[in-house]
Length: 184
Image 1 (cartoon, rainbow, N blue to C red):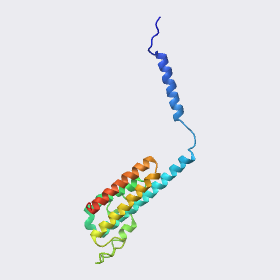
Image 2 (cartoon, helix red, strand yellow; image 1 turned 30 degrees about the vertical axis):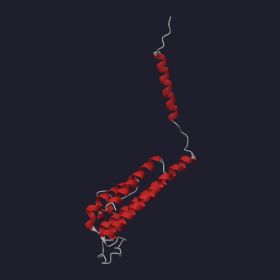
Image 3 (spheres, rainbow, N blue to C red; image 1 turned 120 degrees about the vertical axis):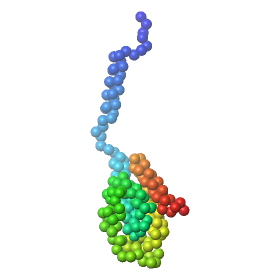
Image 4 (cartoon, rainbow, N blue to C red; image 1 turned 135 degrees about the vertical axis):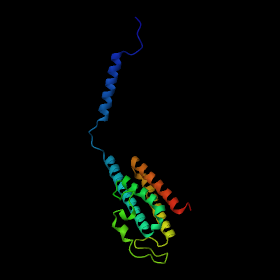
């Protein structure tokens, strides 16, 4: 009698069951993470926290600039909304993306609204915002550039998922710099 080269139903079932058991056993591990894994996780947490704080500081800077120069609101509010989303993406606490500068909940954002700006363009308004709108935009662009550069430098030690987020936010910051400087 010739041997049938096709596998039999029993052998397929047995092979499938053995493969499934092997996958389950290797997928379920109750081992403690290694020191290197714990170190990578805590380094990632530190990077995420630093990125959240940096984005929150940038958000406050947008709020102060908007408070000092309400005529720039149309130009700055979409960028500010992006920065607010970045704060949340990093796990920080920031005001909502649709909130205006006065509704941000940051006490320092409202401090810069008092008093009139000085006529000297080199002098800053209450919270370090230049009185001249052009210089205020340049200062905001410099802050965005510095934040994007810091995020780019942090990529080297970041876990993969966080590195993607850092790179994405750094790229958004570079676009913000372009938009704030009109591509100069």
